[in-house]
Image (cartoon, rainbow, N blue to C red; front, side, top):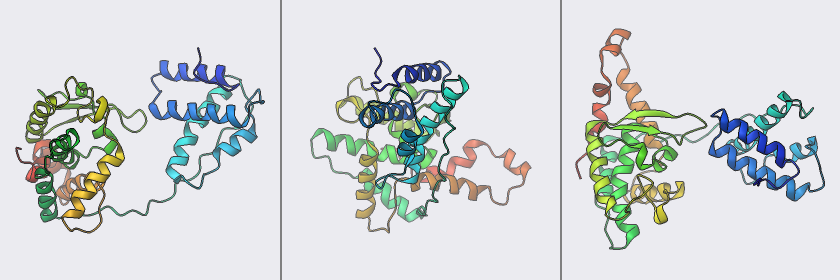
Length: 286
């Protein structure tokens, strides 16, 4: 039985199956196609086929959304239309995706002193005895160090599953990323030891968990949970405004700055571990 309810349900089923078989299906597409289906069923219940009017209203930027979220919402439907056009199932023109507005956010440039104080604050979170505070006290020191030392996106780190992290080799499979961008990273030996110790400690609180950094009811932490706890720790240190995302930016700029002045020969001679070693200045065994 189709999960789609609008008159376009048969076409949506064909599109979804095609993308899944092609290995080009992702959570964003699944969510946005389902929302579009509900939209068509609710606002155009009598329409038997896809029309330009439906697309025009769907593509209009909403007052409550950012340019980026609007583009994400449209991309899936654009690909759906292109599939229909390719198979002779519609005469509608391909959708235009609006230009992305420039992000005015300037990532915070961390100093060594700030990072030291921040990670010290992570290491000294109080354990109030309840499950949530115990998980936070164990998770924060490792989660934020992982982001700082690896450059992982927030979604990539918080949605890591246990099976994605090889605690023997230190190889991490990043499956939940932007679009279909699956890739691998190799943990530094110091970070690997922290992950191993975290795994042992969190296992006592979340038996047979699915996610490496578990939340309540065997789920993963939300983006707001990460940002809220980062800001609380950061603000308590008395520093100027910063976001958790800035840890990823710091990873990139630190590596780039380390390469400054190297010619091609010198850069090739530097091993990955040598380039990354200094990133672990603030990695301590808990």
